[in-house]
Structures are given as C-alpha cells and as structure tokens.
Amino acid sequence: MQVSVEKLNDLERRVTVQLPAEQLTKEIQDRLLSLSRRVKVDGFRPGKVPLKLIQRMYGDQVRYEAMSELMEHSLQKALLQEKLQPLGGPKIEPKNLEEGQDLEYCATFEVMPEFELSGLESIKVERPIAEVTEQDIDHLIETLRQQRVIWNVVERPAQDGDRARIDFVGTIDGQEFAGGKAENTPVVLGKMAMLKDFEERLLGLGAGAETEFDLTFPDDYHNQGVAGKTAHFHVKLHAVEEAILPEVDEAFAENFDIKEGGITALRQALRENMERELRDGIKSRIKQQVMRGLLEANEIPLPQVLVQFEIENLARQLQFPADTDEERSRQLKEQLLGAEARRRVALGLLISRLADAHEIKVDEQRLQDHLQALAATYQEPEEVLRWYQQTPRMLDNVRALVLEDQIVDWLLERAQVADKSSTFSEVMNPSKQPVEPAVQELSE
View 1 (tube, rainbow, N blue to C red):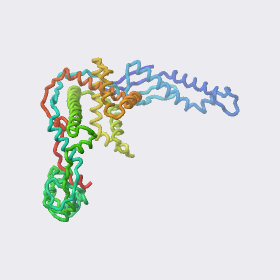
View 2: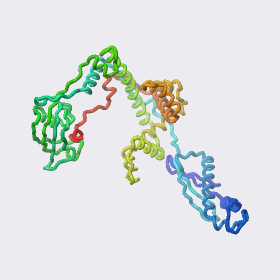
View 3: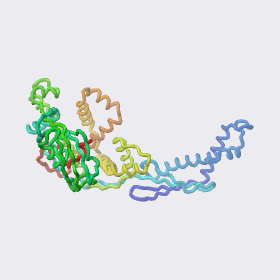
View 4: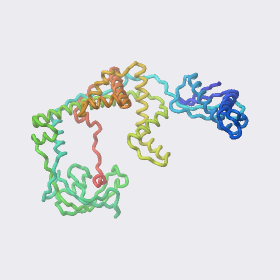
C-alpha cells in the first residue's frame, strides 16, 4: 500500500492511497469462491456451481463490494500510519478503478487546527462593583405595580399616562402603507410606544373625537419604506382610560406568596432575588469580556465541518423553518447564524486547548454545587438532581458550563482586571438603548 498526504490549506488534507491490483483481484476471487459455495442456481447441486457462472452473474456486485471494503480498511490504516484524525466523514474520490490495474483513490477531509495560545495576559476586564439599593427595590416594586394596573374608563380629555383606544389610518400620497392602520388599538400616552408626534396629537382629545394630521417619519426610521416620508393620519378615539395602581400594602405582598411580614418581608424577598440576579449579572459580564478577549487574542482557522454542524445545531434550537430549496435555506442560515456559530466553535477549540495545555479538569465539588443551585430553583430539587444524573447529555452540558467557569477564573488570574463602580440597572441592562417606536408594532 502506497500513501501520500497533500496539505490543501491550514486544515484540509488529501490522502492518496494506492493498492496493488493483485490485492483487489485476490479479494474478488475469494468472495466469488465463497459465494459459489452458498448460492443456489437451478440445475446445479449446492457448492457445484461453476466459478465462471458465478462471476458472470455476480461479478460486478462482488467487485464493487470488494473495492468498497478495501478502500474503507486501507483508509483506516493510512490515517493511523500518517497520524491523521479526520473531522467528519472523508470525501472519497476513486482515481483508478480499471480492472487489472492498481486501485487508487483520494480521501479529502479537515483536521483539527494546530495552534498555541497567546495574549492571555493582554486580556482586559472591567469588573462591575455594584449593590442593590433601597431605590432599586422601590423601582422594582413600582414596576410590579405597573404590571398589575387596572384601566378605568373616564369621561375627560386624554392626558399624559392615560390609555387611549383608537382607530387610525395612515396614507402616503393617498395610498395606505404596511403598519399604518389599526382598529381599537391601545396607546399609553407618554410611553412612546408610537412616535412622539403621533402620541402628542392625542392629548386633550375625548371619547368620540376625531382628528387628522400630517406626520413626517425620521430619516433613520427602521422601516426604510416610509423613512423620511410624510404620512397623513386620520384618527378616531373610542375611549380614554385612567391607570389605577394597586396600593403597596399587605394585600399587594400576598400576590407574591408573602403570607407573613407584609411589605417588609416582600422587600426582603425582592432584595434576595435581586442580589442573586446581580451576582449572576456581574459573573456574566466578566465572562463575556474574558471570552471576547480570548477570541481577540487568538485568531485560529476554523474547520468548516464544525461550523456547519453548529449552524445546524442552532437552527434546530431556534426551530428554523424548513425550506424545500436547500441552497436558499443554507444561505439564510449562514447569514443569520454563521457568525454566532463561528464564535462558538472558536471558543470551544480555545477552551479545549487551554484545558488540555494546563490540565484544567472539572472540579467535581463545583459541579455538584452548580447542580444544587440549579435544582434549588424548582419545587422538587431532589427530582431535578436525579433527572440530571440519569440524563448524561444534559449532565455533560452542565459539566461544560462548569469547566468554562473554571477557565474564566484561571484567565482572570492572568488578565488585566480593573474594578468599575456601577449600579444594579447598569449591570442588568448593559445594552439598553432607546428604540425608535413603530406604528406597525402597535397595530399587531
């Protein structure tokens, strides 16, 4: 057997294998002989069928089976000989299948990238320093009150904070446009769920009132079909509703399963939950920075077979819709999921290499603590723990998360870490930015 290896790029390899014709001929003959002893042919006793007849009847099939098995076995030996570990199934391309000549074929595949980790000491991390304040708890209680608001119809003009129920129709150059029409839709004035100029036109109007006005959409409006254009709106107001918020008292506390202690106990329960969320939020912020720094410091080639596998994995998780056009589906998945898939593959390779290089293994006690914390959020923790222990795939997922946490801790010891004063709100909503509201969103 002759074997040659060609490096097509950083990760792709082409292995060419050549087997002597005698080896293939012997394999075919052995198979035909074995078949002649077992096959039944009319007019011949078992085991007495002429070999030439067997060859005429089954020769092509036997030759195909012999070549397939020889290629499979020889490829395994060649990969072992050359110390190659393919990612995914190799693509086999026969080069010479002529009878009486040497059997030759190529196998093309990707291998794991070879790289050394670098730049670990250059990773920069800002560690948020924050605590839950009484004002944070007040804000949360106010949010909980808003979630339990009762809207009462009032006979007066609409004012800021009221909810107006309206019909509206918008036209541009006399034509209706997508999202520019709705019936009996609720609009809370001042919340800016719709454009500010639109909501301000409703102030001072009472039930039964109708109004018309022109409104120009911003140039950077998210719907480019109407951005920068002027629309004419006709609006009819059906009702004005006033918000009635619940009192913060013992009855309010009971809504949150606080049986004793009233508002004091509620505030304490909220504080404990918020402090746990804050700890998790800080941990998440730090982990994001560490992983981003690790990626930026180590650009590595990514096996496409792993990227494609991760794209399909993400598509399944997101219940990506099926498409009969496979090429269109592939392109759409690449457009929507490709970047995240590449990030995950790169991080997986980097973390695996770092763990191997520095012999970082999952701390079993830390794993159990993590499982206990997960189970504690359910009504029957013991059942949850038993489920994880009996579900290897899910337990492996938790082990991977724990290993990631250990890797983050290891990197933090070497990274450039600076503490930064922060607040509960900043930690929990790091990317919260004002969003230009849409007329269409309210009409749905």
